[in-house]
Length: 69
Image (cartoon, rainbow, N blue to C red):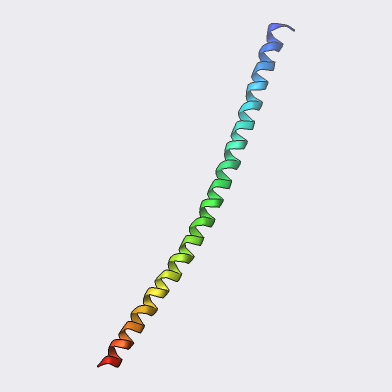
């Protein structure tokens, strides 16, 4: 091979490696973002349940306090 074709082959290899790396990074980032979004939604559901429970307990305590009077 002559020096020009070797250089072109090296450049092509580098470009393909870069494209593969970028695709892999993009897909990994997308997957990670999707997982974080899912986990955040699940956490929000748990917080909503907890807040609902706190509100119910407060109402029950108020009703019990009213009954005591």
